Image (cartoon, rainbow, N blue to C red; front, side, top):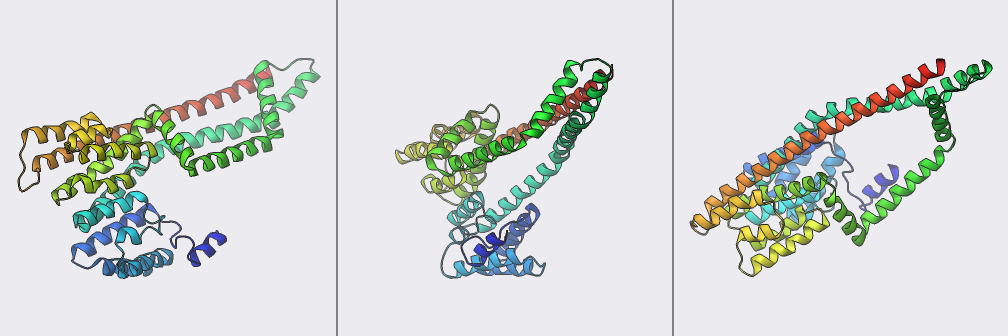
Length: 364
């Protein structure tokens, strides 16, 4: 931590090293308020920085003052925030870029505040269901190791003195815990090697592409990542189109929102269709958008006309497409929490049952 702090002070790393979800939600809300009042971007950022400084949050305030300084030098906010990648992630900067493209920064920060608020609600709703069975499972494992290392050897000596042999389950439990306790450093070394290798693979371009391709193949999880990425795009599309932004101008925003390397390559297909004069729905379909979200856009293109170059029905269709994907994501998250908690409850119960069975069998 001290090394990281030294780097931050020297300008090598970001000034803001960590920020809670609540502070980030408040940051977006305050920026929305200041922009809505008609203040320029630099003044808004400095005002929010002073607000956080009054709350003794010096790192966050210093980071915002640094961003404001770059904005005063003529940089757009999306570029000025690149150095503070902890405070503003790629998705946040993409939203700001969308606001700059549509000349509606107020709406951009309103959407960011809404997304952070939803994230907080999801964390609160699923946290208890996940933590409780997980803690039970780990406590059961600790109890099992205590039994296998301390109780079982004593019971084995007593049975040996009586001329009896240990049953298979108590013997297996005792041997498993003994081997694990004796060679724990091999397990730890293997885990560290795995983490370092995975980190190295994820940091290289080819390794990241390979990793992202396999992530999308995971049943359920790959679909969730895809839907989440495309839902974030559909959240900004209507506001961009309503502001007169052309589909060709949306591509940098789409690339910033697509954190998966495979999905980012699909945006090239979107670009090809738009460049050759194709329809928005065809470009979305080619880029891999789920058909359930493409259909409302296709209907609006086929049966609705343009008014002043802006298709209002398409904008409504995109809002509806976003709502569809958002419902799918909510259902998937709820299902994941339910399945994960059920599995952890079963694992915790199985470990406790195994421990009790070993104790009972060692006494008979």
